[in-house]
Image (cartoon, rainbow, N blue to C red; front, side):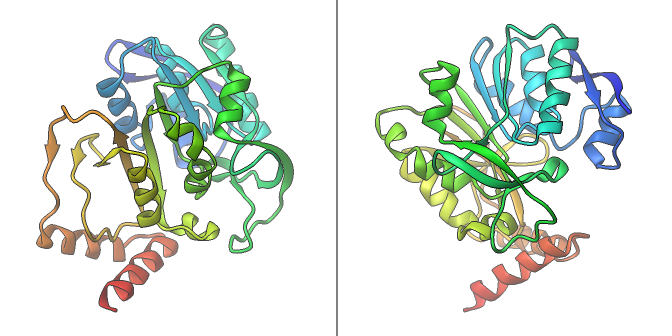
Length: 288
């Protein structure tokens, strides 16, 4: 059953969003007419680093909460969502807000090569199938690389890219290495999820090293949307990072050893067994 609600991600900005009946936390929050706390800092970062009508590419749109908020703020937006059901909800919301001229939805997987892949449409956690992931069911979905997607959008380059694609981040960036080498440097806001990156043979460290090799400066984005120098040891399983060529931000210093210790204890008490397992793995690696 669909419910349409109005949400406001920031003062003076609001939009309508169509939300399915679901127990998933973000969907529940949106149905209450509230903007999810998980998206709030990401939207704050967007507003801080690029101004409308910049082009925003949302890789991993789920129900469109981030991309639709960007469109409501005046950005030109392309949302990539491989889950057909989620893509339909995004298109419904775009129509409700008369965003047809400002939002384009691409129902594809953004990945390492062209062709097609097995995709697990798991609500907000849709991902390419991996031998390490426990996928209940999959479907065949068209896959494109980042440069190929931009060709389809007829965009020379986006100004801002948000990536939350359940472990495929490094694979997408490696496949676009030549595109970055040609001089393109959009601002990147991406999730580093140690649990899902491991499905594809990557780690948060390898992802950060890859992004840094493209000439970016990296900052951690905390739950309040603030920027911080990344810690040398990061115990938390899921962390958001900003990659930019700008250096004019107010940046918090790297966490002290005591702060890292407290962060480690909190991570070991996470309700998620995957998150706790990742933290124990990081500790064992550090000890050796």
